[in-house]
Image (cartoon, rainbow, N blue to C red; front, side, top):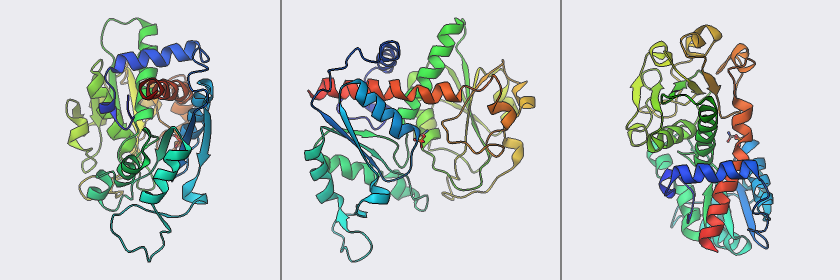
Length: 321
Ligand code: CP
């Protein structure tokens, strides 16, 4: 694997899942693979899970991991080409990324979208400029439109639970929109849809209010309905996530609390497990009664972030020597 920015960088999803499972069983089995190598985790935005799980994953592989919160501690970066830098930006990515590429063997980057201009966000300017200028493999720690490490974790979690239950049928997995108080990126939902469709081992349904479509390039292959109850019927896993509007981009049109998942709604499911990438706004996106119930697997899901990150870093180390 030369880089990890979306499911398209993965030749074999099941093989990568198996690698993650092996690391979960034996975290230190490749403890010298990254000896003498460094990974730089560059954050333009906050993080709890991604930051810490990636650090732990790198340590398991014997790598040194340095975190740089460029958003709060570094020079303000410019990403546009041929711009006159007379505004607030201090350093061009064209100058910063090659330096980071000399300091690190792998660069990992977190950026968020502006949610102001859909075309700009969907062009993935920040991530692509890092890839263009870094000169070393790049891992996305969440970009403007996708969160692939989260999605790999999500499928790892679904598959381990489903295999333990030894059911004959494919699991029904529902991605449901949830209310929120502010505009939220599409990344987790886009990415989950992209990976679920590529994985193909579940019946996959997406439900959201009108105006909250996701990009068709990610949802193609999934059933989509505006009727949440219909979607929840017979579900084995319910993935709860808010995202902002699509066509009139980055807005909050709908905060109808009836979209929040409750135990009453869970009766429509087959005793489904409830997922969320975290952080979650309690009693806005998801009720206490669901989050604190036996349905919730959010902690198991977040814990699995380590094994997904370890599998990806390991693949990149193996490919790039
Ligand atoms: N799910 C996730 O990416 O969490 P953090 O934003 O805390 O890294």
